[in-house]
Image 1 (cartoon, rainbow, N blue to C red):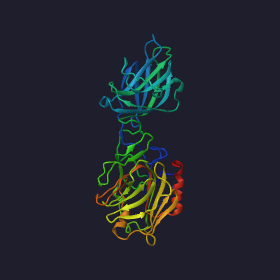
Image 2 (cartoon, one colour; image 1 turned 120 degrees about the vertical axis):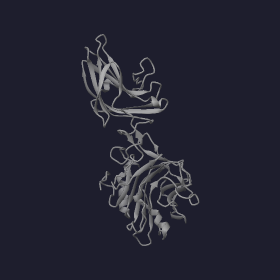
Image 3 (cartoon, helix red, strand yellow; image 1 turned 90 degrees about the vertical axis):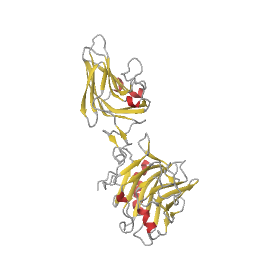
Image 4 (cartoon, helix red, strand yellow; image 1 turned 30 degrees about the horizontal axis):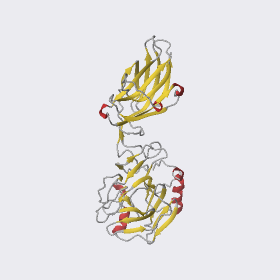
Length: 415
């Protein structure tokens, strides 16, 4: 099993895991919001003379050259742009990495990113915001990332404009390289994708156990994270956001989980979230695990047709508006089958035993996060509102030392 996590994370018995970062889209399982890159290999051009070369279609890398052909002036500009007229009035983001390649008999002055100018030069990217422009004093030797977001105006184009100055002869020129060019119908840039990143490609199980992950209407934040909106009602058919997982996680105890199960996750519940929220839901249509609160005091409960609480004590630390690490240990391999709750690496509640029979086994069905499921006759929770940035399932009972190890391994990201 290949696991892209720090060496301090416990991996023995790891059945499923996702992890948001600290570098979303780079070294963990979060690849970025579902999106479609509208960039093609054939941008249109306007302005003074120039050309482009497709260096690499897979990374949408282009060498762009602006050339001055009139000795009567000493400057020239050229624009490379893509048609987004379908999205006039909608918010679009264009992003890319820019690096300096060369200049001959001219000086690269600046490059701007954005949409067309509605003035006299509609195919000139105005770049009125300083953040949209790389100046000569910032002439990139290494890649500099640029991005622009805005409501598309009547020109219906987005792209790059390069400006050269101090031309000493005809055919003075400057060449820049732009790569990872991404145009998306979104109000912030997301990690690069060549084509479409679907809702099943955005978050991956990094255990390589072939567990599929599907994002359903999650809120995508500009910092690269995602959040649950908590809008689903307790009718078993919510319309809000949640994550669903493949069916190979939905097996019952004790026959296929004789060594117990541990759920391990980092959670931040919104301060304005509902008092009773469904955290995890299972393969049974009448089963999920809830957290609920009166005021700021959180408690835990699993709901089945008969109803069953395995954690009626309050959490030691608040989980509203702040991050907490939790582990829930179902010790099916121990006498009386106790359930243990840990917060921030410390045991705070032990339930004497799981019920015997069908209902208690249903706690180990698992198909997703963030919503209530089942018949409204037995459900009282709303969907979860907040963030769950790291989630792991172990096919065994983790010890107190292992849970503390998981907590301290990535504590620095959150606390």
